Length: 127
Image 1 (cartoon, rainbow, N blue to C red):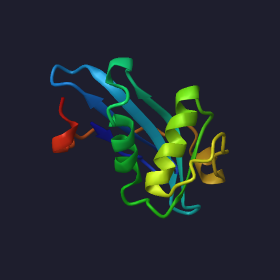
Image 2 (cartoon, rainbow, N blue to C red):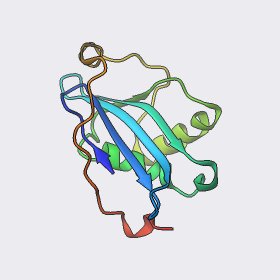
Image 3 (cartoon, rainbow, N blue to C red):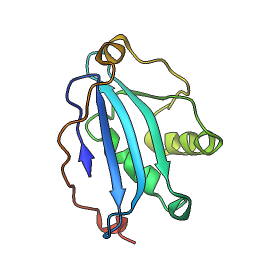
């Protein structure tokens, strides 16, 4: 399920679910076209589903159309400190940790997410 941003500088969200509706992974990020920044606000993959490529696939989906942006993150967990450098090697993005939001992201403050829409799962995303 993908929920687009309502306004530039606002939030996007991607949620992965099993066929019975179990929410096992979620990514929340912001993008600003004026500053050309992508900010990973939160990424979560349930323990049972970790280390199977879901985080990387969600990030590649988030970066689609924003490949040339500077990508940063909020504070990183111990897992994130391993995940983001490895992802950076394959995407070329720096994923600088603890980066501040740009002025446009700060101005949006709490902008809601857009109407959810289902996206087809890639063939390699099914379990």
